Image (cartoon, rainbow, N blue to C red; front, top):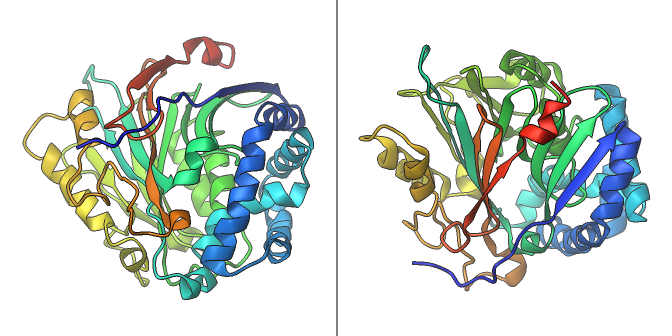
Length: 377
């Protein structure tokens, strides 16, 4: 089963310098797609939360102080993106807190369900093995994002260079950096997600890509007062990996999900035995346990390989809400979701395979970032 799609290639945005220089150039290069992101979220936020744009901007303003306290350079980067794109700074902050708006209690009261976000994996090499660390995910999101995604390649004046596949105007999503660290992620929703200002999900993702070790990323997640639930699958080319389920709050609200047979799998609900809150994810994204079961079944009897995982990422069980997610024609167009990108990363040789849309319909591009990363090592 496949879905006809026009062949597309998400544009690459390459930036360097300090936070202001990088942000300004990101905004300039991705200006048209950033404008599409903002315009799309005007409608999306109204649909999911019932908020007009002035309410959204007022809500977003409450996150500026927590972001600055967490890392001033991330707020500088957001403001510089706005400057480069020729839009108001709060418009950029607003789309970077889209998770906090859409997954908050107010949004859940206004909508029957929420779009799923991602089926993620990591293949962990055994100690002494010559196998590489490989991780990745299918990223499922609203279909307007086919027209807003970019591949952001950044070289920093201080800190590792990084690559992230991301909605234009947002700081980061999944990606990897020159220190050998890689990141995959899943949206989650708990009873603690009420939209209280703190460190937003997408700012946390950006900060993780500044880390050089898995333990550093874990400490960062625990040390931040997070504003929303999320799963962070963090791995390193040295063989270390952690899957961290976090809800709003401090270090006491970070839970670990263990690997089985050197494989980490995660979709959009809580798995850690120490999770002690209400798992709203299962109500909001009921396809999540089905996708997880398919991933487990697909990797239970064979030695996991990149080829096998790539085949699984095209799986259509429970269609259209499958691992390879397709738009549901009975949904309102604004509510239709799909796999907007499929990403696999080999952290040993700095290689990413990217399908620019549905992996059943789009070829995987092989992208190597050794040249980008070399100057930052």
